Image (tube, rainbow, N blue to C red; front, side, top):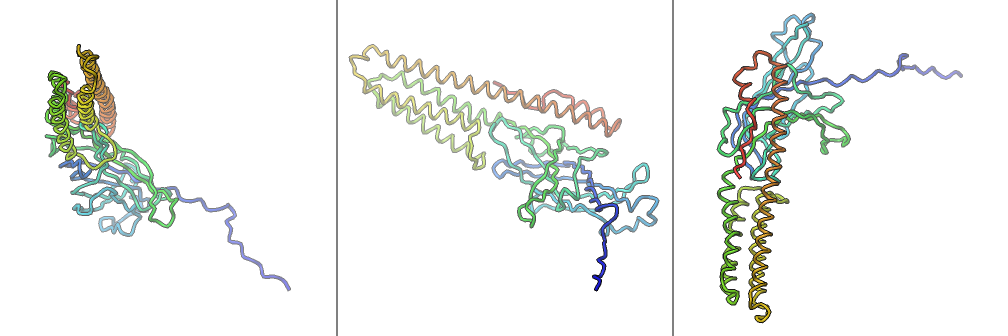
Length: 375
């Protein structure tokens, strides 16, 4: 008995190729920036986000009544703002836009007003600059959608509406970076999702910390040299003065901690305060040890004199190295920001042309958007 023929559904031309991912062009405008909270690692902002993508089924030759279009019936990248606070106010609307050749684009616009989380990089605090980012992602994988910065509309920032300018200096450019993430809560852990991080850069106005913490700690630690003016035969008086200076340094350490989140690494300010406390400790330790030295071998005070010279060299070396480190880091950051500002200007002129106002060009051409270091 003949076996029934098995119907072959294989395409004679081979397997059907997968559709390429759709490109979504994103524009972000920082309409207003509010308070930057270093302790809570968040910032307040009013942000406008525009996303557009091709919809070939709506090309002008195929659409008749697009005014009554229901966008829910068409493909959508399902954009999400990853670092948005849940309490943020938001609104969303869509429209249809056509290119020069009649190609159709669905344009989705949204405005979000609230707080956004941001991981602060505080190694250089209080001489730091922070990226304030809006992180845009999708619930569709990179096989379905990819993000790109819009090459027809310019992402921008309104620096004149910055509300926290007493503590920060806002640089007049916007930077975009594309990456991917894996969402572990999904069924397929190896699936990657697109991410577009659009950032502006804020540089801290550090003079408050210089005058109120660094210079005060400098004066307190300098006073340690005054303890050598007390006769070495009166160690109790020397130690009393040294302990008072050390406890004062501890108080300032707690004051500095109130301006920082609970981080597991030392900032520049931490290192400066910690050195001042260790320096006071070493001076106190010497005053305790010098009383144990035999009077006959130390009657001319040579040990105390050379200890005094050693502490001067140690203290001066640290101050010079700390200053050089701050200055070098400042120059590197300044060069990086100037490079980014120049690239942003070129992009703005390319996209907007004559619409890029002369007033904004003059402001963007100003040298160094960082507060100069007054050392």
